[in-house]
Image 1: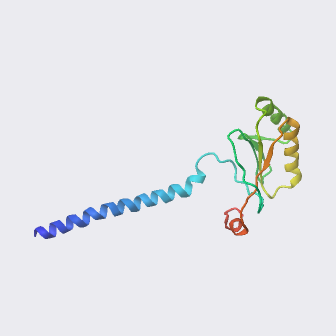
Image 2: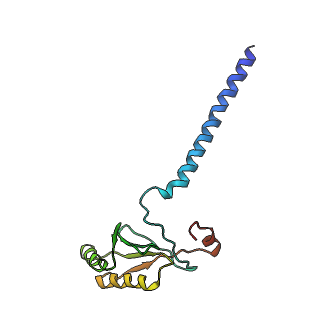
Length: 147
């Protein structure tokens, strides 16, 4: 009789760590899968493909300009119209002139619209610019959700 009780206790004690490991694994997968959705990452931009582009180093001092496919212009988390953008960029440059302008423009936009934003940034006094693209190979491009 005593052998049966010890056997039941043994199987119950090993089942708990296995169940806890499975629950932990499921929580990890959910957190890992939703992490890009948490936080303020800006609008979803379908970047153009550039096979041999250099890697963008990034900095907290960058002035990031988002240009999603719906033709909004978002600067420092504020939506701007094309008529207000030159003034906004001048004000930002007057406060922090050493910033790098980083443009994330959707590949569906006409280049003329992107060129206008770069020109207004240059006229405001900024001198360093990055146009971000999607780098990698064609397979990576095809595997993206938004490609």
